[in-house]
Amino acid sequence: MSRLLQDAVNELSKLPGIGRRTALRLAMHLLKMERESVLQMTESLARFRTDIRHCAQCNNLSDEDICPICADAARDRSTICVVEQVGDLLSIENTHQYRGLYHVLGGVISPMQGIAPSDLKIDLLIENIARGGVREVILAISTSVEGETTLFYIMNRLRAFPDVKVTSIARGIGFGDELEYVDELTITHALANRREVE
Figure 1 (tube, rainbow, N blue to C red):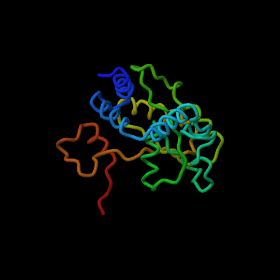
Figure 2 (cartoon, one colour):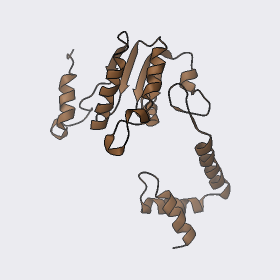
Figure 3 (cartoon, rainbow, N blue to C red):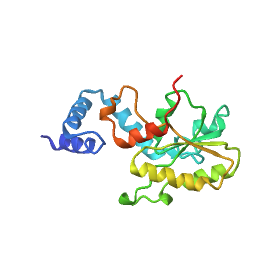
Figure 4 (cartoon, rainbow, N blue to C red):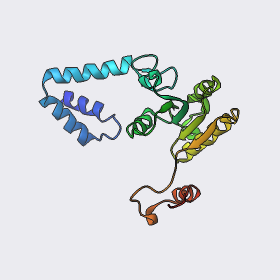
């Protein structure tokens, strides 16, 4: 294998979910592309890496100091949805069902990985709530052990704001899931969050 091709495959395989075979296919595809297209792609990636910022209000990725969501005057500023990562924000935003603001933590508390509460943007969330005007905080955090730890930590911090309603997204059995294949924690959450059938 050419050293240049091997270098390209090594770099591409560093991406999450990309094994060596997929990296080789991607590298070969890049060879078939027009030079201009490849240059545009690499320049775009380089600009993204050097110019991207974190929103000063919610920690979302942005081209400016304030992201478009926080800058949108039509958003409901009384509600903040707390998510782990920007990808979670995008998933919720793609549903077109939520019109409030967001807060991106940047991960979850994980002592095993050396991630403490101070490593996340929890203090920024508390500062935003302390300014006033927030009536509800929705915790949209994963159901992993680390996610649950983070959820309880944030809930404890939010006790300082008794007028703020703290909710969590519904957890339970997904549409189309068969009960016999669902884990016990999910079933526990589903039973705890059951609702009346109309």
